Image: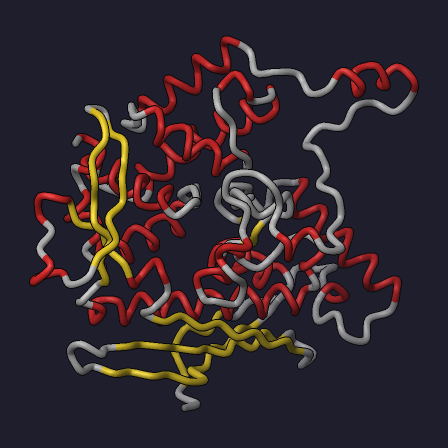
Length: 369
């Protein structure tokens, strides 16, 4: 309790950014300046979409701030971020092993104004608790109770078993780093008042049990928690105002074209995804709704999906994920109703967590069944 962790980040504020930190007690003029500065960081690509922030499929149009982006904000606004272990539970006994860590991050500016954030992670989160085993390898005596899941591969339908991870000990370091990341991002968001631009990592919040994973939209529709009082999503490109734009609005969104569909197929193939069901499930997670056929997508959704697939391919290479394990990793993430991150740092961390849990070793050939 109260044990300090050596991950302090210190930086001097950029000239002109003094009024943009620690929103409590700020005047309207100071708040306006902070808002303007945050806008400029995004518009000038100081904060880069895909590596510093991005849209998590199924969580709405408000982007999620990644740890890399939070570190840039801390440097720009001259924040020192101190991390403290607030609580932990470590049960090492076989059969009942459980690990829980809660960290508290305090972001302080040079005037002493501060904001705190807390983040936790535990070994019973779904992404750490479960692993999948191929049907031919499953044994009740070895793996214990399991859930049988049907999948569709290149050669037809097959089954895998979802079993509880019996080796959670390898996750201790991963859980600590995840809890620290969650606390860090929250503290920086509060310190610079960036919540108007970014949200906490909704995927992390669901995994931590802060929100119900079933509340997240997976195959169409918004979550109940986000629909209540939420602002309407803004389209990426708005039509010009005036009477001339009204007929186009009445006609509805333009449908995906043949060139886009061809490009989607090519990008999926580059990732090794030849199973139509897996490809559709991945794209549904990206666009945030279900559809029966690729032709049901809009042109904007097609462009967004192509951009995502291109970034994912680049991120997989940058994260150093072995080519022969990428398909298994993607399949595992998509099975949970999500899409892999396009942030190489976040991607590598998530991949490592799954690899340590034994998921990829057992599932590496799942897509080729």
